[in-house]
Image 1 (cartoon, one colour):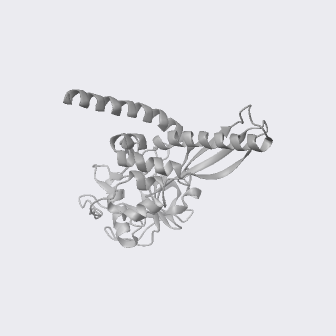
Image 2 (tube, rainbow, N blue to C red; image 1 turned 45 degrees about the vertical axis):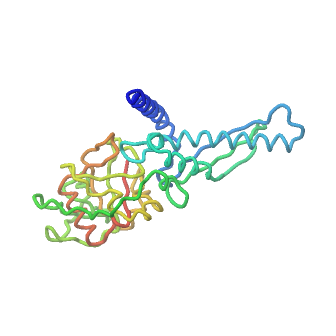
Image 3 (cartoon, rainbow, N blue to C red; image 1 turned 180 degrees about the horizontal axis):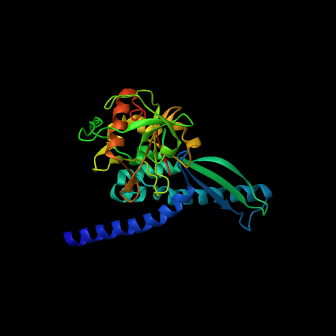
Length: 300
């Protein structure tokens, strides 16, 4: 009997993974990682038996809302909580999570609606990923304790930094060296201390956005994760934003430190930094606490 139950459990999980992979494709097209919302537009038409124009419009609107809810459930299920787990996979393994996710979807808000040219009705609804009654609170568990940020790897000197022609700072050597104009004067192992945030450039690597990202160094040591942060702040604001270019990387503030990921791990969800760059990030965070404040942006 136990073997049967275990087999059924494995089959359920396998089915969830298959469904999640399909949902992930849909989520990729309907999740706004810059605004951190999941958006769906539902459509509806009135049944032939509608007696009045007002009744037809009301029934079409109801059908459109139901369609938007259905789509949101699909899109939400495909969102990655971390590099290994989608919301659907987490919900299959926990009745509590499934109940919370369903409640979050039911709380979706209507952001626009109206009739269409062919007499139908459209409703656009959104589910927030972070904030009050958002998805993050349903799927990210509160850690037992907040873990300290790790110490730097003293076997490798921290990367030096230099300014670019646009006034921003980047580690050196890096792919930005062609635009660099002057080296920073901070002694090795000391912080410059003026950085407002961190930008990790992952462009061209195929970075996959996740709700709970981790940054590692090339030796596999995590230097940033939700267990290092105030849980309530993570649920309210998220851990990072994802942008396509520098102009959209406002979360990192006016004077960000820019580093280049050397690779990705964990299904392309985890950026990996050189040890020297990771050391520089940890040193500067010790001075201005931009990681603690979740002022992190990933370029993808």
